[in-house]
Amino acid sequence: MSRARDRLPAVLVLVPSVVAVGVFVYGFIGWTAYVSLSGWTTFIPDLSFVGRRNYVELFQTFRFQADLRNTVVFTLTFLAACLVLGFLLAVLLDQRVRGEALFRNVFLFPMSISFIVTGVVWQWLLNPSTGINLLLEHVGLGVLRSPWYTEPRIAIFSVVLAATWQLSGFTMAMYLAGLRGIPEELLEAARVDGASEWALYRYVVVPLLAPITLSAVIVLGHISLKIFDLVFAMTGSGPAFSTDVPGVFMFETTFRGNRFAEGAAIAIVMLLLVAVLIVPYLWSTTRQEART
Image (cartoon, rainbow, N blue to C red):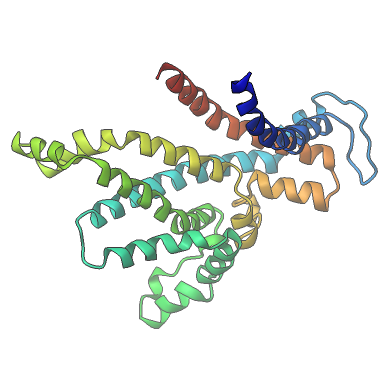
């Protein structure tokens, strides 16, 4: 009786949060899923059930097919760039360089900026007639000028560059914390056994940092799958939809085109893409906690 009475305050505090999450998260997800199966294609609500028609038409749309390709390219290159650059920066800072705190703050500072600001800044920097191109022209390296985001074949990589600039500091901080957590005795034992620095990182450090790499992939992966503001502010859809992503397509379809059912279908597809990444991780984590 006493134990139940002790738990009562905790339950009373948790119940409003559970209700709020249930209504405003899962409730709206359910509502969006229902709208995606309806015939609501104008400004006037129409909740008549049409089945999977909106999804079939969506996957037959050239723009959405381009969005999926762009999402795959963006996610893979963005993850690879952030992980490699973040790891290298962490290794360099782990050498106890003078002014480490300054370098750490410099690399972490971009995280404090919103994607909207980052998009506007890099849109100007990579503008074909200003920014970096103008600087190259003034220093006599005009041959290195590039169309950046106006060339469909490379436009998506301009967005990757901006996103990597903003979030590589995040992976650096995670890897640096992991490096500082590895016992020095373990590294010294490997060196005594004759391991070179390359072998030390290849067979000891990198495997020990695998959980951090997985966490970084989960965090950065779900950001890249639902990216919107950076692309919208920097390039929009780009030439021939070369930088378009589902988030931008959903915004324009829903709030500019008033095709609410199609916009809801895009939102559900984005949710499923993120779930493919997140659910296995949560399931694995839950099982590990249950075993311990």
